[in-house]
Amino acid sequence: MSDLFDRDIKRIGTNSTKFDGRLSTFGNANVMPLWVADMDFAAPAEITHALIGRATHPIYGYTLIPESLYQSLIDWLWLRYQWKVEREWIILSPGVVPSITTTTMALTQTGEQVIIQPPVYFPFFSAVTKTDRQLILNPLHLAKGRYTIDFDQLEQIGTNARMLLFCSPHNPVGRVWSKSELTQLIEMAGRHNWVIISDEIHADLVYPENPHRPLASLTENPENIITAIAPSKTFNIPGLHLSALIVPNKIHRTAITHFFDMMHISAANPFSMVAFETAYRSGATWLNELMLYLKNTRDQVDGYLAEHLPDIQLIKPEGTYLLWLDCRALNMNDKQLKHFFVHEAEVGLSPGALFGKNGSGFMRMNIGTPRHNIMTALENIRKAYKRVKVRSGRIL
Image 1: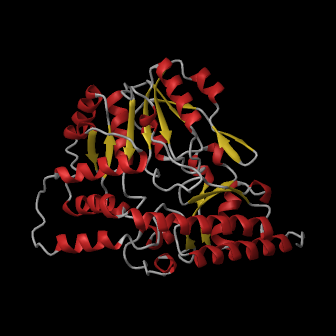
Image 2: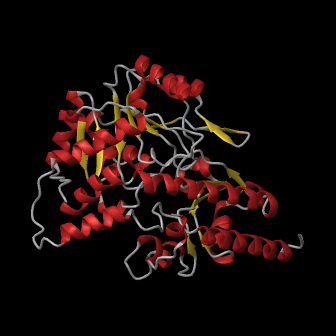
Image 3: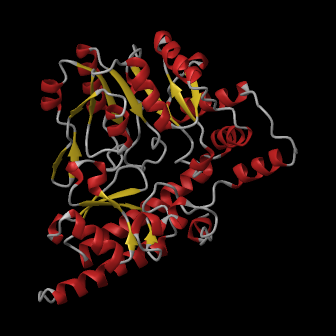
């Protein structure tokens, strides 16, 4: 199946954010786009066939959500993680980001404290600040090329907090949290009475040596843990916009559903529902092949940087198709880093500073593309860095 992942599929001219948005994003339409988190791989054939089948019915009207869709998610979570989820816990929504923001609004009050753990997916910041909640930072700790949770600092700042936005697996640093870390977090949240929103959209995208554990599955009392999940990243269908919140607490479910109803937010899109259910029913084999392919790419990047670009250190990910690159040894500020990658190397990455000030000096690379594209990008970076060093008088 690796032939599927090695195949170039033209995306230019399809209104692709990743490709057709290059000029507006980078000011350079020629960059190799390795930024926004979707992949350049064809979705599982079963999803495409199911969508074509639905499209043959020529009426695309208002649609009910079938019980079989809910069951597909319940079955997936049980088979993959041995996590027993009840049907009534599930709330569907058009996406994880609006779910996080809506849940923050539904379960906290204006001015209440919400903790995030930067560097982290940037909508976490706006979910707090744009809803007039108080942002509290618990920066992750980086040592010897690996990030960990600073539990001592978290204990100190968490006394008056109401909520924690948790990213698991973590975007952008690639951590798949261990069972001991997760249980420690659950214990601390229980003592402080935090509600945890656990963004687990990358849950299925983990490498074999690092199994994912749903946070809510590790406690007999998950009442204050809300899990956001979707097939969108896993099966490369993010443009279809359908996700799920898993909310064991009935009071929380009522509050969240009230906000969705108040804003007339509906998840009942006939095509997204077909893709969602088919993905969870039929996508496992494709996903297993994908992760083997991505692991090979990840490891080749690691080896290439060590041999040819030692001033860029890979924070080796345990999950996700996103690489967190430590570029601080290049001795460039964030503006210079952006210029170097965009205009010297012509590689479009996500600036680390986008994920908070703790991301300064880092860049995020999306390896969800045929491997030869990644190796070409690395060559472009190496050659560009050599040119820059020559111009500065420091010949390699």
